[in-house]
Length: 151
Image (cartoon, rainbow, N blue to C red; front, side, top):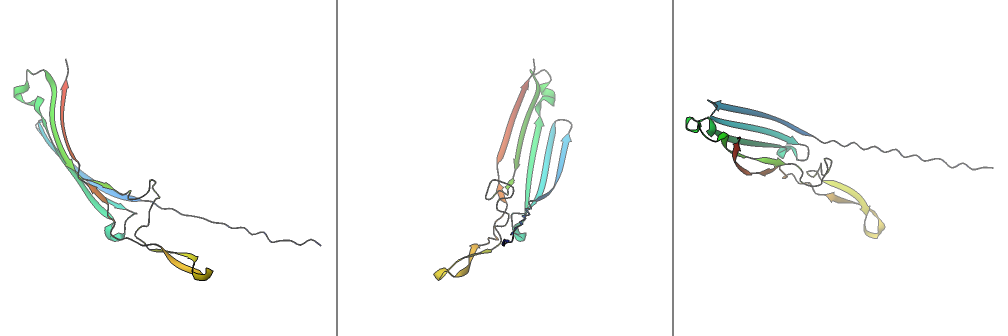
């Protein structure tokens, strides 16, 4: 007589979601092909942060002066001579990890099963949620002076 052992099959599935929702606006104004300004505002929402800190607003502003279009530059050796300056803020949602799916839930508290005293089953805190994480903000200054000479 042959004894049959049951076949145990385990199926597992994992769903990973990552997302960044953004919208932005840009305005550019040029006066007489000599002077110009540009302003950009961007608003981002990242899945990595809690609902209270999910959104970040970033902006940049710049100005330019096309010196080569001035009347005193008519007989200059420069075909194009511009002076530009800008300032802006940047954001960083990669607060931990190197992939898009790293640390998507740091704002949540999680519990895990473990072995307690005397080998008994226990539940322990695996991650303490942090609701204060915010989009990292930077304030890099950027100033450019560009010269183009065409002979």
